[in-house]
Image (cartoon, rainbow, N blue to C red):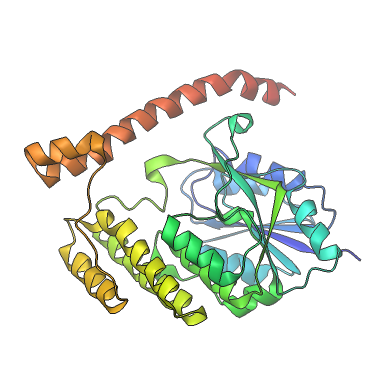
Length: 339
């Protein structure tokens, strides 16, 4: 009998997209799957739409709002699968995503292995997604994966992973305290519990860009800044637990430098902690710089205006681009609804 794959979907105010997401799961060519949707106290029609899909294969439950991490933990507690596929309520899987990854399992790839896949951004038109490889798009040991992620400021989107129940249970639950970077910290623990990553290039995930309303957007939130730095400290500890060497310490210092601008100059307490941590690792952080498009404004008007411009001008451009993409998607959306 083929192994059961559990597709776990936490959902909060996802009425616009959740039907498409569930459709992409039901279209999977892997024959043995269960879908568990956990509604996290949505205030829109998410629950009603999800319940239209209820069947022997699709379970929909609801609870009070607790956040994405707690909702994922609830979904896992309800599942029976041999393998776990996490999926956000607005993202899409290509029809053969799970089958192509499970082909390695059927070929003898052990349950301590970890499977990843290709992914690409889109807004409203998945056919416009462009898959651009990074240094993580290959087979890697847990140590090498973390070194590349942290030193090059890379990541893999949540839905790319297919994880055995054995590794999932060894990694432990999602951490509700981490707010935005809970996925980054969680998959560090998954990596530590695994024997390494196998990358499946022809398995694909479509990651819908929700912009500045997304959970991972930090902005000027003190709580999110503090939570993100907590996640960074955990990342560093995880990597050094695998290999404490000159190269891993250098990767950790680079990681701190890459993210320093997120906290500077609003949270100088975190900046000082980062500097102290870098010194313990044998490195030194430098004052971050804005990109050339905004550095002149910082020099002319100060950090406040330079960083504000860096935050708000791309936001305005993104909003315009998203609106245009939505309008261009309407003919296709109407055609699909007519069918």
